[in-house]
Length: 174
Ligand code: SF4
Image (cartoon, rainbow, N blue to C red; front, top):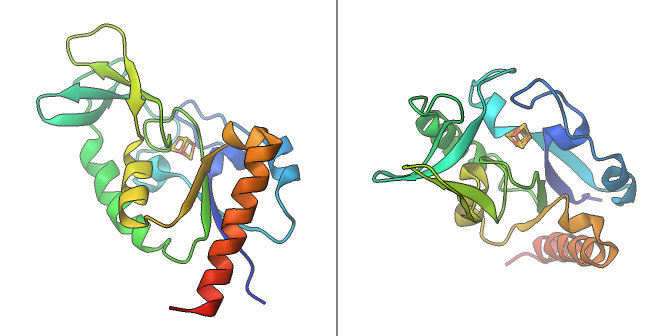
């Protein structure tokens, strides 16, 4: 019997893939997920070859669109490698039923990610991480959530139900 396949930001699994060499392990979330969920780790930044540790980046609205630029060195622009990797990686994830991504990340955040003006100043919180945006665009039926959403038991219940429904729909076929 095929199990639900759910992508997950690797830092939430406790893997030390963050820019500072740390992680964001979410043991409560992992304990709350159904045992039959097959978790597929992903980290768009390390997979794109940016390394760990690496300079932190943030989303910046520029005349060339939204870019991922260095926090400490605005001359550092990693948008191209992140987008190139994301385009290829998303194609390997078409068999997922859901995905749990890290909130606020310039790569993984599914909504409300800070986007800074190029001239400096306060960010808006209307952005989507570069990887998450591509995932949503290319796999529109994929059930997405972040770890903060799923700390709410009702949201977790809805997420689990939608993932199972997607698996059932897949079993029935077109
Ligand atoms: S938020 Fe995403 S890109 Fe950043 S460390 Fe976690 S998995 Fe990697």
